[in-house]
Length: 123
Image 1 (cartoon, helix red, strand yellow):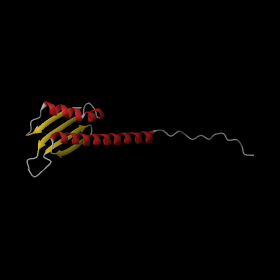
Image 2: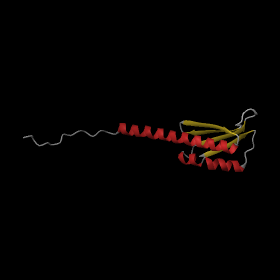
Image 3: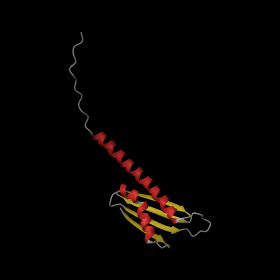
Image 4: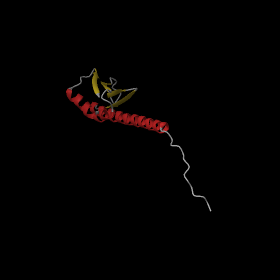
């Protein structure tokens, strides 16, 4: 999985990029190598908002796009919350796809013909 981290009016350090790679490691194990994750970090400018540090993640998969957005007073905590939410979404998406594939396979499986077994005559 390719991970892109960008900060909106916020510098993105190498430590922050390493933390993102570590936190989204669980997600990267569940998706394809071709999947692309975009993480955008920014700070709300409104002083009335307590949860000012925001992390928005967008995961582009084949045929579907998953999004997660979380806010908290700390940027690292926002990233952690976002990673957990994205992990749940990916797991749910994979389970849905697996169930669909299994139901199609069960419907397409040929039903064996019913043969009458030789039964002994009743006395």
